[in-house]
Image (tube, rainbow, N blue to C red):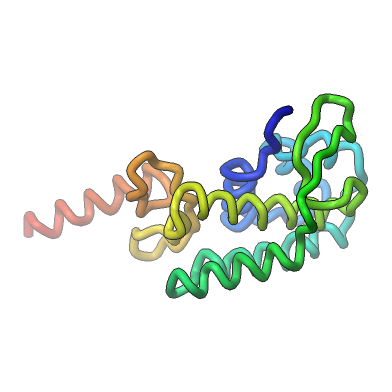
Length: 176
């Protein structure tokens, strides 16, 4: 049995898609392919404008989870996504490459597939790494989203560039 890419890969796909939104169905397909998250399933299906719209709705809901003001709200919003996009877990060998878990039927549109991956991945990320492991960049004026995959759980920036920029700003403010 192998593990599905629910978790970090799906959360990183969500970060990628909210930071730099896909503007066409083809671009969404490419991004899913690049992320490796269920790429075979996306590649084997025609991604439509309806799929792109469905993913945008799911990402708006996901941003609610990211921006939740407290743990209880974050958990409630994550659970609402799970209730909307997932079904009971089940074992499947739909591709003939080994048994693994799915949280959705095998045949769903790409938009629903991506929403399921993001909601399930986010829940596993928060439960496994910590409920506070999603956030917005601490650099003034940035606001990009990050998923904290660090060992210590102290990530505050969306990228090393923003962390460096903020460190330089703090350093310069002390020198004045």
